[in-house]
Amino acid sequence: MGVGIIGIGTVVPPRVLTNYDLEKMVDTSDEWITIRTGIKERHIADSNVNPSDLGAEAALRALKMAKVEPEEVDLIIVTSASLEMIFPSMAAVIQNKIGAKNAGGFDLLSACTGFVSSLITGAQFIRSGDVRTVLVIGTEVLSRFVDWEDRNTCVLFGDGAGAVVLREVGDGYGLISWDLKLDGSGADLLAIPGGCAKNPCSEEVLKNKLHYIKMNGREVFKFSVRVLGETTEESLKKAGLTPADLDWLIPHQANIRIIEAGAERLGIPIDKVAINIHKYGNTSTASIPLALEELVLEGKIKDGDVLALVGFGAGLSWGSAVLRWKNIES
Ligand code: COA
Image (cartoon, rainbow, N blue to C red; front, side, top):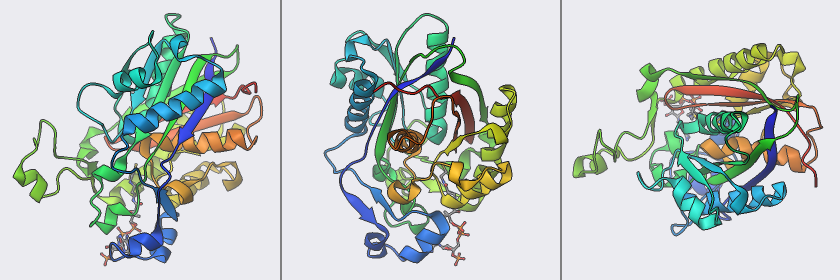
């Protein structure tokens, strides 16, 4: 059974934080950030806006495009690297906000790989025949987990949300193949170590800023370049395809240099790669839908195009999903 995307919606908070704004906050420059990351600006949520607010808005937009009512949603999968609370799940909070009164659901956590993992998971539920309509939502207010005094990390991240509606789309279309991998030996390379069971909230945690993102940028960079190529090739191989068959590579938007190096290793020309990191920074689970939606709305993706969605990040975790695109009827 072909299971694919029948609607997509995204949202970013209106407030923009530019590199020039960051120059006033930490010892950095627009030139450094632009050259090393490709980021020019990012959107930051106001203090009264939570990840579930952005996620619900993105979900409603995706449902509208899909012409699906909230009551028709069977399952909600929410993925995030900036949890609203440990429990209840964000799936429950968003279910209530959008009025999806017949839906079940859960949160699926896999940091920046979360959108790919959730898309693959949602598709399996539909393939099993048990459900018809799945809503997958990636939503982030990462700005609450950023140490705004740490120039190594604060220039990278931004807030936003993206959602897709999944349904049967016809034979030969939709999810063709996928690959998901973990390497927990690299868990310390990128983490928010404090505030949960291992390092519960305490004065010590606050003093050492363990409730903020901690990252070994160089190691994460090398890892990301390697796995971007590896997982894309693995998924393509499972589909009996090669990188030359790809119409669009839609990678997690972490750093322009990671994206360019990954595409080069795969031999994919840069004009077949979705890039919008300059506008949003790294929005973790929201970055792939934000990049995909832009291509869809610009009419760049044609019916039958082969897409690879590629995620990578903390865990370490990484993965990819190859889809044959079915045009969304307007
Ligand atoms: N502005 C100015 N200088 C900065 C800076 C900033 N915002 N951040 C770091 N620097 C400095 C460093 O302190 C270092 O100075 P030093 O040589 O005097 O020690 C110098 O720039 C080079 O640092 P380095 O870490 O080698 O830079 P880099 O080229 O590796 O770029 C990252 C740093 C963080 C941009 C890059 O490593 C990266 O993108 N890593 C992956 C991060 C990521 O994508 N994480 C999420 C994955 S989902």
